[in-house]
Image (cartoon, rainbow, N blue to C red):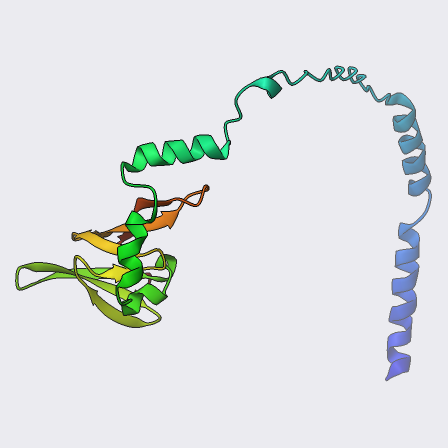
Length: 179
């Protein structure tokens, strides 16, 4: 069986051997000529401009992040007493369940009307809570000030940079269910 195919192998080898020959010499000669004719043109790159540093002249001016200036601005914006008058009532009352969680771990998932009063549905740790105006939530003594269809408004009491207690507002927005 192998002897029968031997002449075919010899014929195929001779045929392929005939494909290689002087054509490659012509190709090599043509490639040498083409390389000799092509001259690359490279445009020189212009020199970079010299960097000259500018002196800092505002060193003697008022520092924009001065803690005294910040404290004055926060007091002016809050329009509330700046000391323990805000925090004293919060420290004397009993804490509610949702005051153990930070606001960023809570999500408002809905709202409804119950006996003419708006109630927000807040999800924390896969549990659902009903929150009404006046309830407390969050770590910063947050008290719910208003509830509407899309958000829940809070008044929080926090310390500013100088250690003074101030009021600030925060909101929980209605969270759409992700699919």
